[in-house]
Structure formats: C-alpha cells, structure tokens
Length: 155
Image (tube, rainbow, N blue to C red):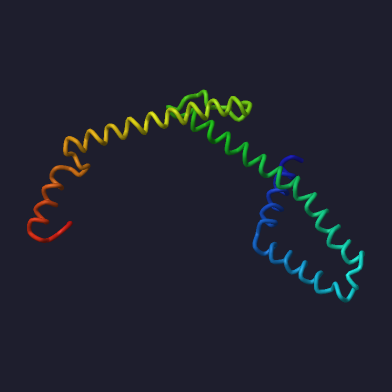
C-alpha cells in the first residue's frame, strides 16, 4: 500500500508540475470567466470555480507534502551517508532532529570555522604574493615573460 501511494503521489506531483497542466488550468479559468455573462455571473457560476479549486487544492496539499517528505528523507539519508563515509565530523549526522536553537548554535560554529578557514587561506595567499609567487609554475612564468619580451603578449 505504501509503495502504491508513493508511486501515485510522485506521478500526480510530476503531472501537476508540468507546463501542460498549468496551461490546461489557465484554459479552464478562461473558459469559466468567458461563460460568466452567459450565466449572469450567478452564485452557482462562482460556486463552480470555488468548489473545484478548493477540492483540488485540498487534495494536492497532501500529495505534495508526501512527495516533499519522501524527497527530504532521501536527501538527508544521502547526506548522512556522505558524512559517514568521508572525513567529515559525524556530529552532523541526524542534525535534522535538533531543535531550532540547537541548529542555530551548530550553524554559528560552522560559520566561525568557515571564517577561520577563509582567514587562514587569505593569510597564506598574501604570504605567497609577498614572496613573489603568482600561482603560475616557474617555467610557464619564464615562457610568458619571453613572449612579452618578443612582443607576442600572453601565450
């Protein structure tokens, strides 16, 4: 039953998100609006679109939520596997179960570590520039210089 519903929900979500479905819905609304004068813009005429859109919206909320839950769980499982199989810190596995406050604290730690890494990288690059290292291998630097000296510009 779960597999059947998952398959059905994925199929409906795929169809609902297609350009064809959007154009079909626009066409239905245009036809409905065009028939307004014919029905005197009556309450019944208004009730048709209101009831139809309410029912479709109500059902789609649950189907879309189901597909998002499944996609989120699959993505989280893949991320956990990448963390587990790499040199990353295992403390990040399962963080989706933390409270918002705990997530904010962990996020702040990550931002601080990123700032520290960026500062270390910038210091290392500044030191390399200070020493005259351009990031281009020495032999290529000489070739570039030779080309400029001959009026050839960049190789």
